Length: 329
Image 1: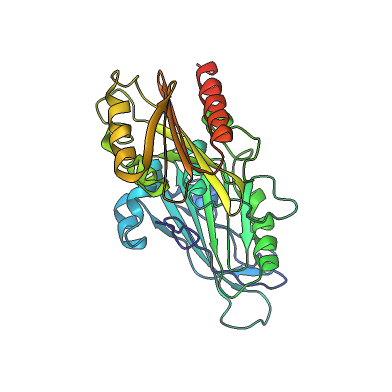
Image 2: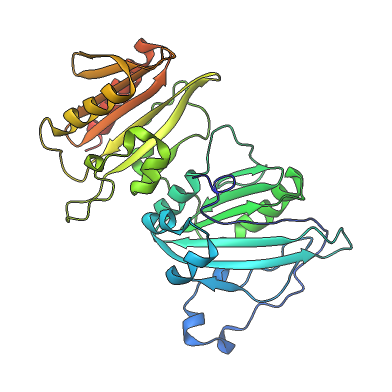
């Protein structure tokens, strides 16, 4: 469920020009009390070199988001959505008319939530742009960033990566916050052999299902609503194409009942894999291509290695991840 570069979230249709900032920011005294409560970034974005804001901001709360994101709103809600502001821009200079810019800024419940929904777009090794300190990515036609409690996505089919990068670099200082807030569980992902920029924060059953079919079962408790706290997960890719695998670390709200989690994972392994066996505390199996799938569980933490060609490397990675997670308690 990748929302254009994963577009459950945001889009910027971008174009380039060379002067901007003509549109005036509204005086707070002229705003309604409700509007004054909004952060300035949700009311006006001006002063981007090369761009002029075209029209008023459009805002969406939970009810309106269903109509704005066709079929993609639920995953945003599961991360913790507050509101969306949409701005349209036009080039300040006489450039091709088909170049238009639509900027969407999502305000989430926390910085971690903003990083989480941002991370659902990441595949790894995305291009960055000089001078942007917050987590971001830039490509021909698209871009995005996460800063503070805000998530921005850029969709720009008529533009180059340079045009998008320059726009993102001018926008980033205007977004409130001191940088990107990553959940501490991201630090449990071993760095050795990790594909740069592939780390994801997984929150809610929809994000879990999108991450892997092995995370679809309700026994993972990504949607737990019984007051014990829902499970969350952290994932990253490892290796070099075509031999790329994935590691997922799951943190449960409470320690799973003894044996229950293992029995459910074993059932899925038997359904999807072959040569299922236990090696010490690890459950393992292989797919038709001979790639290894490993599962381990200790206390409130579980880890999965999905599709690694090297069993020894997979076991080492799984053991390190569980050890780091347990040491963080």
